[in-house]
Length: 64
Image 1 (cartoon, one colour):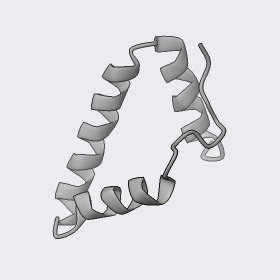
Image 2 (cartoon, rainbow, N blue to C red; image 1 turned 90 degrees about the horizontal axis):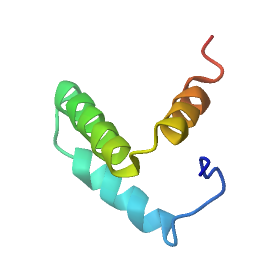
Image 3 (cartoon, helix red, strand yellow; image 1 turned 135 degrees about the horizontal axis):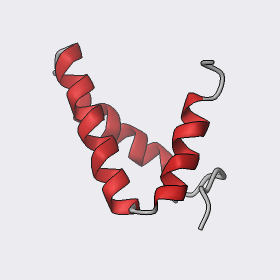
Image 4 (cartoon, one colour; image 1 turned 180 degrees about the horizontal axis):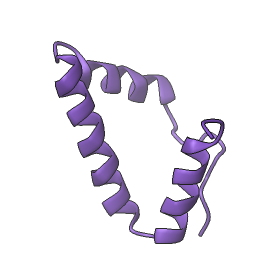
């Protein structure tokens, strides 16, 4: 399996709305904590180290 980089969420606007709502009313620190928890939950769900390594590389690209 490899990382899917093409749009893969049937209703991306709905997801984005839910993501923004999740952070509404939180402090910056709380929002960072929620993001960290979300990353770890999704990484655990994926569970495939090569795919996770690809995702980490893509996310970091441009910051080196």
